Image (cartoon, rainbow, N blue to C red; front, side, top):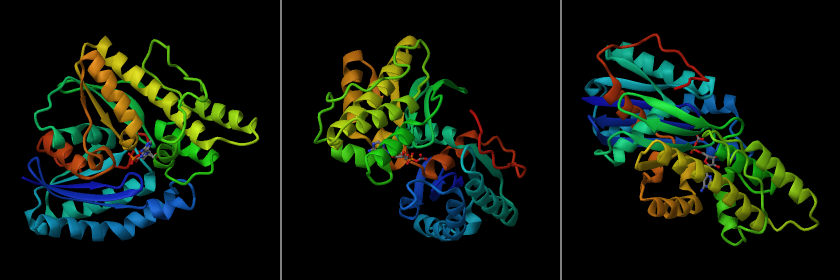
Length: 325
Ligand code: KG4
């Protein structure tokens, strides 16, 4: 079965072609440079760029996969959560294609896509496992069971990536903030500041990062000269400590011995190193997919479509910006 995946929920225009579970092509066009000057993703600009980029990315994906339009057997598209205008571009394109080709259409939840991305790298991975999903829009601990994905905990305010982006802005660094913080943090002392770790000791698996960001702001307001490297390193340590403490606590509480990291923040080397240390100490298997499958891509939407398609085409799918699991 040839499956076409389409992903336009935020600022990446992505199309992928899979033959069953094998990737024939996966093309991602990022809009980061467009949004950089605004310090974050501007929804309307994102939608407009998807509109102009999607046909080009689609053509590239087909030609890299060496297939033609008529080879497509199933169209799989992200229908939420995400930016409404951005989602509508992908969904409209997918619906048009489905009608033209008379091929079935399936809508995929973006978060479900991130979970299924792991099967691209680890085809033998079997539930149960725990996923720490950390991106610019999401921070969730997921418990993947056979047919079910249970949200064990999530952020009550800012996502972890959002916190990185906001603290980077406070420090006068560029966008996206995560890589900028990571870059200067390597020259800083991660124990220079003892930033708060909200909800660290709470019994649930929820997160809260907005207070941490405010603590960074108030701390540096009191200083004459800002030791940016130390602030970045201490902030990065606080976020990492909170994320990993809760994730491995969830794995231990649920007696699950595999933890997977997903989302853009999973690119952070400090977080990866600490996660590896804890996993070794706790005897838990840690899986970190390559970064192209941690961040937004359409191969994950295609594989989710392939595995979840039950033979029914759904042309009634609508963009659901706040779609839950
Ligand atoms: O998954 P992603 O590429 O896109 C969505 O959010 O949909 O994640 C982007 C987020 C941004 O907030 C960015 O600052 C953060 O991931 N990020 C990082 C790193 N690379 C990207 N955060 C910390 N360290 C990094 N190396």
